Amino acid sequence: MDTYVIIKHLHSGFRYIVFLLVLVAIIQSLLGWLGRKPYTETNRKLNLFALISAHTQLLIGVVLLFVSPLVQFNSSTMSNSVTRYFSVEHWVGMVIAIVLITIGHSKSKKITLPESRHRTIAIFYTIAFIVIVGTIMAGHLPVLGSQS
Ligand code: HEM
Image (cartoon, rainbow, N blue to C red; front, side, top):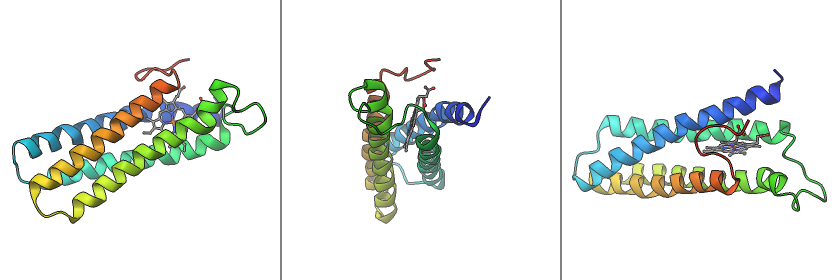
């Protein structure tokens, strides 16, 4: 197995960790916001782990940009839907989602009211999750599972 295939599988598999942590963060923040619960150390850690997983996926993705044969910049890149998706659309969509998670997390740190803290995480992480799933679907990739 060459480096490209290993990194591609790593990136593909790591999505489940991102999905799981972001979803757990969303659920706990919704429960905390709507149930007016305190913002606990567990809440803080899970929100942070979700952020770290998204940043890790970003790093693996950046490596893929350099090794994937589907990422290419030539005269036919934009006319082929697969190369256009992986060379432009995929990473732009994912970077937007990761920026939203980062902004939400950093905003929540500056808030003292527990309810608003939960609300900020709930809103930013939920929009980011929708952008992630939407971006995968836009490339006609299976949200769960792999093409090959
Ligand atoms: C939460 C963020 C992300 C998720 C959930 C995600 C998910 C995926 C998935 C499911 C695939 C298809 C893998 C397969 O065919 O088995 C893929 C491919 C790819 N991703 Fe991401 N990705 C994310 C972020 C990024 C970022 C930020 C970049 C670039 C900076 C990136 C670059 C790539 C590239 C280049 C491929 C093509 C791999 C190939 O050659 O088939 N991804 N990604």
